[in-house]
Amino acid sequence: MIKSLMTKPVRFLTGLFLIAVLVFGSWQSSFATNDEITVILKQPFRIVLAAAIGSTGYSWSDQFDKAFLKLKKSWYEKPDPKLLGASGKQVFMFVPLKPGNTKIEMRLKRPWESSVSKTKVYQISILPK
Figure 1 (spheres, helix red, strand yellow):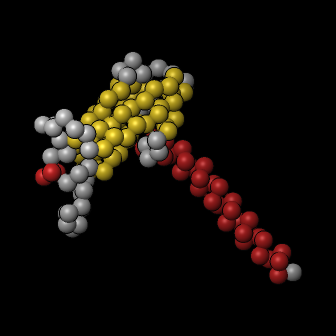
Figure 2 (cartoon, rainbow, N blue to C red):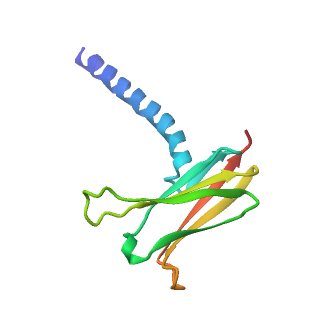
């Protein structure tokens, strides 16, 4: 009897977990936290990257195939002023132009230096509507 009572809560929690994965998994692709992103044609999506502290001069730059993607806009979000030394976020909003596969390469560097501090590559799969 105890065994049967224990399985119901476990099944319930497992079901909730699976629902959360399905719901938030599709949300993540729009806000790009993974290195593989699936998006839908003409629907904007974002890549959000932790930015270095502004006074260091580091910023993210993008490189991508303009036949597949359009950079709609990018901006910097300041950190919470209560958190001393916290880094802000750089947000890049792209619009998929045609179905297919492409990539976005993000590079963290200072504009006046040739060396790149960090590189992130996102594989983008663009689905038709």
